[in-house]
Length: 312
Image (cartoon, rainbow, N blue to C red; front, side, top):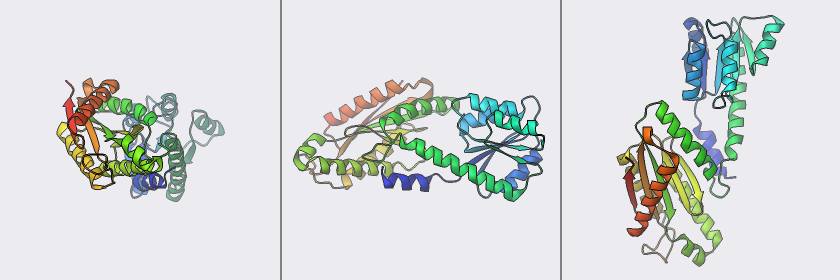
Protein backbone atom coordinates (compact mmCIF):
# COMPACT_ATOMS: atom_id res chain seq x y z
CA UNK A 1 0.00 0.00 0.00
CA UNK A 2 1.37 3.42 -0.96
CA UNK A 3 1.99 5.76 1.98
CA UNK A 4 1.78 8.65 -0.49
CA UNK A 5 -1.74 7.60 -1.45
CA UNK A 6 -2.85 7.37 2.19
CA UNK A 7 -1.46 10.84 2.94
CA UNK A 8 -3.16 12.31 -0.13
CA UNK A 9 -6.46 10.69 0.78
CA UNK A 10 -6.42 11.93 4.37
CA UNK A 11 -5.26 15.41 3.34
CA UNK A 12 -7.62 15.79 0.42
CA UNK A 13 -11.02 14.68 1.70
CA UNK A 14 -11.84 18.12 3.07
CA UNK A 15 -14.95 18.96 5.07
CA UNK A 16 -17.50 16.23 5.58
CA UNK A 17 -20.96 16.82 4.09
CA UNK A 18 -24.03 16.56 6.31
CA UNK A 19 -27.57 16.43 4.92
CA UNK A 20 -30.13 17.87 7.36
CA UNK A 21 -33.71 16.77 6.66
CA UNK A 22 -36.62 18.46 8.44
CA UNK A 23 -39.92 19.88 7.24
CA UNK A 24 -39.44 22.86 9.60
CA UNK A 25 -36.82 25.33 8.24
CA UNK A 26 -36.23 26.73 11.74
CA UNK A 27 -34.98 23.30 12.90
CA UNK A 28 -32.62 23.12 9.93
CA UNK A 29 -31.26 26.58 10.73
CA UNK A 30 -30.65 25.56 14.34
CA UNK A 31 -28.57 22.55 13.27
CA UNK A 32 -26.77 24.65 10.67
CA UNK A 33 -25.83 27.12 13.41
CA UNK A 34 -24.32 24.27 15.47
CA UNK A 35 -22.54 22.37 12.69
CA UNK A 36 -21.94 24.94 9.95
CA UNK A 37 -18.40 25.88 10.98
CA UNK A 38 -17.20 22.27 10.95
CA UNK A 39 -19.15 20.70 8.09
CA UNK A 40 -20.63 21.42 4.70
CA UNK A 41 -24.38 21.45 5.23
CA UNK A 42 -26.98 20.35 2.69
CA UNK A 43 -30.69 20.79 3.38
CA UNK A 44 -33.94 19.03 2.46
CA UNK A 45 -37.48 19.64 3.69
CA UNK A 46 -39.07 16.35 2.60
CA UNK A 47 -38.25 12.69 2.30
CA UNK A 48 -38.35 12.69 -1.50
CA UNK A 49 -36.06 15.70 -1.67
CA UNK A 50 -33.67 14.00 0.76
CA UNK A 51 -33.45 10.91 -1.45
CA UNK A 52 -32.60 13.04 -4.47
CA UNK A 53 -29.91 14.98 -2.59
CA UNK A 54 -28.39 11.71 -1.39
CA UNK A 55 -28.22 10.35 -4.94
CA UNK A 56 -26.76 13.56 -6.36
CA UNK A 57 -24.31 14.50 -3.60
CA UNK A 58 -23.57 11.36 -1.50
CA UNK A 59 -23.33 13.10 1.90
CA UNK A 60 -21.23 11.58 4.67
CA UNK A 61 -24.13 11.59 7.14
CA UNK A 62 -27.89 12.26 7.14
CA UNK A 63 -29.57 13.97 10.11
CA UNK A 64 -33.21 13.01 9.70
CA UNK A 65 -36.34 14.22 11.47
CA UNK A 66 -38.83 11.45 12.23
CA UNK A 67 -42.12 13.36 12.12
CA UNK A 68 -42.63 14.73 8.59
CA UNK A 69 -45.76 14.86 6.40
CA UNK A 70 -46.33 12.54 3.43
CA UNK A 71 -43.04 10.60 3.71
CA UNK A 72 -41.89 10.45 7.34
CA UNK A 73 -38.35 9.89 8.57
CA UNK A 74 -38.76 6.15 9.07
CA UNK A 75 -39.98 5.71 5.50
CA UNK A 76 -37.18 7.94 4.22
CA UNK A 77 -34.54 5.93 6.05
CA UNK A 78 -36.01 2.68 4.68
CA UNK A 79 -35.83 4.12 1.16
CA UNK A 80 -32.19 5.15 1.64
CA UNK A 81 -31.23 1.68 2.83
CA UNK A 82 -33.16 0.02 -0.01
CA UNK A 83 -31.19 1.93 -2.67
CA UNK A 84 -27.78 0.29 -3.12
CA UNK A 85 -26.34 3.52 -4.51
CA UNK A 86 -26.84 5.36 -1.21
CA UNK A 87 -27.40 2.57 1.34
CA UNK A 88 -23.95 3.09 2.88
CA UNK A 89 -24.81 6.63 4.03
CA UNK A 90 -25.35 6.54 7.82
CA UNK A 91 -28.61 8.00 9.15
CA UNK A 92 -28.89 9.66 12.54
CA UNK A 93 -32.44 10.47 13.65
CA UNK A 94 -33.21 13.77 15.36
CA UNK A 95 -36.43 13.11 17.20
CA UNK A 96 -38.74 14.20 19.97
CA UNK A 97 -40.09 10.66 20.31
CA UNK A 98 -39.31 9.07 23.68
CA UNK A 99 -41.19 5.76 23.87
CA UNK A 100 -39.16 2.55 23.71
CA UNK A 101 -41.10 1.16 20.76
CA UNK A 102 -40.48 4.40 18.85
CA UNK A 103 -36.74 4.14 19.50
CA UNK A 104 -36.84 0.50 18.40
CA UNK A 105 -38.48 1.55 15.14
CA UNK A 106 -35.52 3.85 14.43
CA UNK A 107 -33.07 0.97 14.81
CA UNK A 108 -35.19 -1.39 12.75
CA UNK A 109 -35.14 0.84 9.65
CA UNK A 110 -31.34 1.07 9.72
CA UNK A 111 -30.40 4.15 11.73
CA UNK A 112 -26.94 4.23 13.30
CA UNK A 113 -27.97 6.54 16.16
CA UNK A 114 -30.49 9.12 17.26
CA UNK A 115 -30.50 12.32 19.28
CA UNK A 116 -33.38 13.75 21.26
CA UNK A 117 -35.05 17.10 20.72
CA UNK A 118 -34.51 19.75 21.93
CA UNK A 119 -31.02 19.33 20.53
CA UNK A 120 -28.06 19.72 22.86
CA UNK A 121 -25.29 21.36 20.82
CA UNK A 122 -22.37 19.50 22.44
CA UNK A 123 -24.11 16.13 22.16
CA UNK A 124 -24.91 16.75 18.49
CA UNK A 125 -21.34 17.83 17.72
CA UNK A 126 -19.83 14.78 19.39
CA UNK A 127 -22.19 12.24 17.85
CA UNK A 128 -21.80 13.70 14.38
CA UNK A 129 -18.02 13.63 14.77
CA UNK A 130 -18.08 9.95 15.80
CA UNK A 131 -20.24 8.85 12.88
CA UNK A 132 -18.44 10.96 10.28
CA UNK A 133 -15.12 9.50 11.45
CA UNK A 134 -16.48 5.95 11.24
CA UNK A 135 -17.91 6.61 7.78
CA UNK A 136 -14.65 7.96 6.46
CA UNK A 137 -12.64 5.11 7.93
CA UNK A 138 -15.02 2.65 6.26
CA UNK A 139 -14.79 4.54 2.97
CA UNK A 140 -11.00 4.46 3.13
CA UNK A 141 -10.88 0.72 3.80
CA UNK A 142 -13.25 0.25 0.87
CA UNK A 143 -10.96 2.40 -1.26
CA UNK A 144 -7.96 0.13 -0.56
CA UNK A 145 -9.62 -2.64 -2.60
CA UNK A 146 -9.47 -0.36 -5.62
CA UNK A 147 -5.82 0.70 -5.38
CA UNK A 148 -2.99 -0.56 -7.55
CA UNK A 149 -0.43 -2.18 -5.27
CA UNK A 150 2.62 -0.88 -7.14
CA UNK A 151 1.75 2.74 -7.88
CA UNK A 152 -0.83 3.54 -5.20
CA UNK A 153 -3.27 5.02 -7.73
CA UNK A 154 -6.63 3.49 -8.57
CA UNK A 155 -6.75 0.17 -10.42
CA UNK A 156 -8.73 -0.98 -13.44
CA UNK A 157 -11.53 -2.42 -11.30
CA UNK A 158 -12.14 1.03 -9.83
CA UNK A 159 -11.90 2.63 -13.25
CA UNK A 160 -14.51 0.32 -14.76
CA UNK A 161 -16.97 0.94 -11.92
CA UNK A 162 -16.37 4.67 -11.72
CA UNK A 163 -16.52 5.53 -15.42
CA UNK A 164 -20.04 4.10 -15.67
CA UNK A 165 -21.09 6.01 -12.56
CA UNK A 166 -19.54 9.26 -13.83
CA UNK A 167 -21.43 8.97 -17.11
CA UNK A 168 -24.71 8.30 -15.29
CA UNK A 169 -24.10 11.20 -12.88
CA UNK A 170 -23.27 13.58 -15.73
CA UNK A 171 -26.50 12.66 -17.47
CA UNK A 172 -28.56 13.27 -14.33
CA UNK A 173 -26.88 16.61 -13.67
CA UNK A 174 -27.12 17.59 -17.34
CA UNK A 175 -23.41 18.24 -17.69
CA UNK A 176 -22.14 18.63 -21.24
CA UNK A 177 -18.95 16.63 -21.93
CA UNK A 178 -16.75 13.96 -20.42
CA UNK A 179 -13.20 13.26 -21.61
CA UNK A 180 -11.00 10.20 -21.20
CA UNK A 181 -7.23 10.04 -21.65
CA UNK A 182 -5.48 6.76 -22.45
CA UNK A 183 -1.77 7.03 -21.65
CA UNK A 184 1.12 4.66 -22.42
CA UNK A 185 4.82 4.89 -21.53
CA UNK A 186 6.81 4.95 -24.77
CA UNK A 187 9.01 1.88 -25.45
CA UNK A 188 8.62 0.63 -21.89
CA UNK A 189 9.62 -2.93 -22.75
CA UNK A 190 12.96 -1.64 -23.99
CA UNK A 191 13.36 0.26 -20.70
CA UNK A 192 12.80 -2.93 -18.70
CA UNK A 193 15.16 -4.87 -20.95
CA UNK A 194 17.93 -2.35 -20.41
CA UNK A 195 17.49 -1.38 -16.76
CA UNK A 196 15.59 -4.30 -15.24
CA UNK A 197 12.15 -4.63 -13.69
CA UNK A 198 13.02 -2.91 -10.40
CA UNK A 199 13.96 0.23 -12.29
CA UNK A 200 10.85 -0.25 -14.41
CA UNK A 201 8.66 -0.40 -11.31
CA UNK A 202 10.21 2.82 -10.01
CA UNK A 203 9.59 4.51 -13.36
CA UNK A 204 5.95 3.42 -13.24
CA UNK A 205 5.59 4.88 -9.75
CA UNK A 206 7.12 8.21 -10.80
CA UNK A 207 4.97 8.48 -13.92
CA UNK A 208 1.80 7.59 -11.98
CA UNK A 209 2.56 10.18 -9.32
CA UNK A 210 3.27 12.81 -11.96
CA UNK A 211 0.00 12.15 -13.78
CA UNK A 212 -1.91 12.35 -10.50
CA UNK A 213 -0.14 15.56 -9.48
CA UNK A 214 -1.05 17.15 -12.81
CA UNK A 215 -4.77 16.38 -12.49
CA UNK A 216 -5.65 18.95 -9.87
CA UNK A 217 -9.45 18.82 -9.68
CA UNK A 218 -10.91 16.61 -6.91
CA UNK A 219 -13.19 14.79 -9.37
CA UNK A 220 -10.44 13.91 -11.87
CA UNK A 221 -9.64 10.19 -11.68
CA UNK A 222 -6.28 8.59 -12.48
CA UNK A 223 -6.03 4.80 -12.74
CA UNK A 224 -3.52 2.20 -13.86
CA UNK A 225 -5.16 0.35 -16.71
CA UNK A 226 -2.60 -2.42 -16.90
CA UNK A 227 1.14 -2.78 -17.49
CA UNK A 228 2.47 0.63 -18.52
CA UNK A 229 -0.96 2.02 -19.44
CA UNK A 230 -2.90 4.61 -17.47
CA UNK A 231 -6.35 6.17 -17.88
CA UNK A 232 -7.51 9.60 -16.76
CA UNK A 233 -11.23 10.42 -16.45
CA UNK A 234 -11.99 14.14 -16.73
CA UNK A 235 -15.64 14.72 -15.78
CA UNK A 236 -17.40 17.78 -17.19
CA UNK A 237 -14.46 18.54 -19.49
CA UNK A 238 -14.67 19.47 -23.16
CA UNK A 239 -12.10 18.74 -25.87
CA UNK A 240 -10.05 21.92 -25.33
CA UNK A 241 -9.89 21.33 -21.58
CA UNK A 242 -8.80 17.73 -22.10
CA UNK A 243 -6.09 18.83 -24.56
CA UNK A 244 -4.79 21.29 -21.99
CA UNK A 245 -4.52 18.56 -19.35
CA UNK A 246 -2.92 16.09 -21.77
CA UNK A 247 -0.28 18.62 -22.85
CA UNK A 248 0.60 19.28 -19.21
CA UNK A 249 0.93 15.56 -18.47
CA UNK A 250 3.11 14.86 -21.52
CA UNK A 251 5.39 17.77 -20.60
CA UNK A 252 5.54 16.87 -16.90
CA UNK A 253 6.56 13.26 -17.58
CA UNK A 254 9.22 14.37 -20.03
CA UNK A 255 10.53 16.80 -17.39
CA UNK A 256 11.18 13.90 -15.03
CA UNK A 257 14.21 13.20 -17.24
CA UNK A 258 14.32 9.50 -16.39
CA UNK A 259 17.13 8.17 -18.65
CA UNK A 260 15.92 5.99 -21.53
CA UNK A 261 18.65 5.86 -24.21
CA UNK A 262 16.65 3.47 -26.40
CA UNK A 263 14.21 6.24 -27.38
CA UNK A 264 14.63 9.18 -29.72
CA UNK A 265 14.28 11.57 -26.78
CA UNK A 266 16.83 9.96 -24.45
CA UNK A 267 14.41 9.89 -21.51
CA UNK A 268 11.09 8.35 -20.51
CA UNK A 269 8.15 9.88 -22.37
CA UNK A 270 4.50 9.06 -22.84
CA UNK A 271 1.90 9.11 -25.56
CA UNK A 272 -1.74 9.95 -24.92
CA UNK A 273 -5.04 9.50 -26.72
CA UNK A 274 -8.08 11.61 -25.87
CA UNK A 275 -11.75 10.89 -26.52
CA UNK A 276 -14.42 13.44 -25.63
CA UNK A 277 -18.13 12.67 -25.63
CA UNK A 278 -21.36 14.40 -24.71
CA UNK A 279 -22.80 12.76 -21.61
CA UNK A 280 -26.11 12.13 -23.39
CA UNK A 281 -24.46 9.79 -25.92
CA UNK A 282 -21.48 8.53 -23.91
CA UNK A 283 -20.81 4.83 -23.34
CA UNK A 284 -17.94 3.38 -21.33
CA UNK A 285 -16.77 0.91 -23.95
CA UNK A 286 -16.87 3.34 -26.86
CA UNK A 287 -15.08 6.21 -25.16
CA UNK A 288 -12.29 3.87 -23.97
CA UNK A 289 -11.98 2.32 -27.43
CA UNK A 290 -11.79 5.69 -29.15
CA UNK A 291 -9.20 6.99 -26.68
CA UNK A 292 -7.14 3.86 -27.33
CA UNK A 293 -7.33 4.49 -31.08
CA UNK A 294 -6.03 8.01 -30.55
CA UNK A 295 -3.20 6.64 -28.41
CA UNK A 296 -2.20 4.44 -31.34
CA UNK A 297 -2.14 7.53 -33.58
CA UNK A 298 0.08 9.32 -31.04
CA UNK A 299 2.54 6.42 -31.24
CA UNK A 300 2.44 6.57 -35.03
CA UNK A 301 3.11 10.30 -34.86
CA UNK A 302 6.44 9.95 -33.08
CA UNK A 303 5.36 9.46 -29.45
CA UNK A 304 5.85 12.05 -26.66
CA UNK A 305 2.60 13.68 -27.87
CA UNK A 306 -1.17 13.29 -27.81
CA UNK A 307 -3.92 12.93 -30.36
CA UNK A 308 -7.63 13.43 -29.79
CA UNK A 309 -11.12 12.94 -31.17
CA UNK A 310 -14.68 13.87 -30.26
CA UNK A 311 -17.47 11.33 -30.47
CA UNK A 312 -20.54 12.39 -32.47
